[in-house]
Image (cartoon, rainbow, N blue to C red; front, side):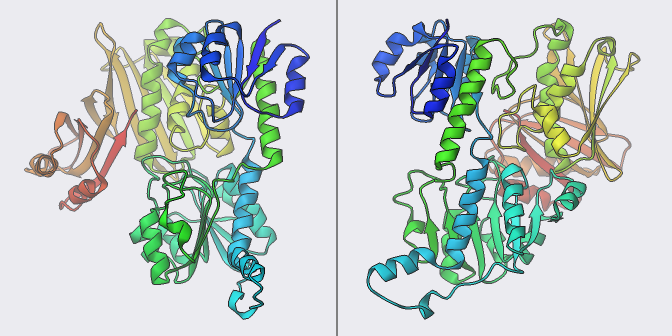
Length: 527
């Protein structure tokens, strides 16, 4: 009988469920030293957020097959170390979505009716009804930034209050918005200018960090009310403080902060702010649900059954080695497409040219989707759920093949289409070392190896453009490691791709965009 260590408190029903088939030790008070000594005795481990399962712990877990995190994030688990040891890491990403949506509504209502201040006033024996006059939700405009699972739940609840709901999520189709009764706007600025209330429900990525700052607050209605129950850092806290002081923002409700615990954050003392200590998932039901979910998943994994929420799900073992070599490249092509299309696509087509066309390539298509959704959704993306994300967003996925190829032995082309427009990227492996190369970007042939930091510029093909871009980067101490240019005809449009050693700040990208005849520019982070 396999043994499972439950290192933190989960629902008693979850433990009893596991004990039907496994030997379970529930030891929440076990010290780290004892845990390291005994981890080798167990095939399964269940933790929440307090237990650090780092490389040292993974090394000690000599018999471990699965680690379960009763919750969403896996920041306290060294997933890479577990993967190298062949240990599955599983989480429960759906366990807290209802609680997070309800926390948003709780803060919304408390903010509108001044509930915390009124309670404190009455406790001080004051009866001041005029001071705490509130506002109604009825017929107001709620702007939701991020229409994933939690954002959608919030939308439904706001509609029940008679609110008009608009949303900005470039990865959600207009058709889905219509089905939900939500008006999707194509630009964030459009939402900012219309909404009486704004709530964010996004993953925290380099692209969403400080998404709402001084410039965005300036575009909002006077007296707007703002909420964040998603991730700290999406709202620039200093900019929010300035907007509150100026009266631009009437009030804000925050459950998450850029640095937690946020006991020293100036916003928590601001009279226009309702702040709670990251309580989005802190309901009895969510905690119990996380425990029972993870117990079910860990038990299934130890029995060899299918589990969808494996964070580090490996590539299926039966994949041909000739196909397996292309998996990292396919994933990078999907991620590159995400950056270039900047939003929802109606269709993703993956075309295989050359010898690859003779193999079963379904897993490569899934790898493309895995890369595409990597920076789009909250949940870790794997080979099981990537196609589900595409289906959920109404994205048609198509494979085409041809064993005929002109320039390369093998070529993968990925095309994203939306309303008649198309963005294409292509890649291949070259040489005895199977080096990855991007060989097609937008509609241009190019030859550039992937790197952690890259940028692509489209511009009029006139003398001096390369020098202007290089000069700006050099002035800011940004070194160009490699550069390639692709064009179709002299004097038309060209694309420049560069590898750089460090990230290019947004203000530097803006400086480049101000160069006359620069039509488009994208900075991307591939890993």
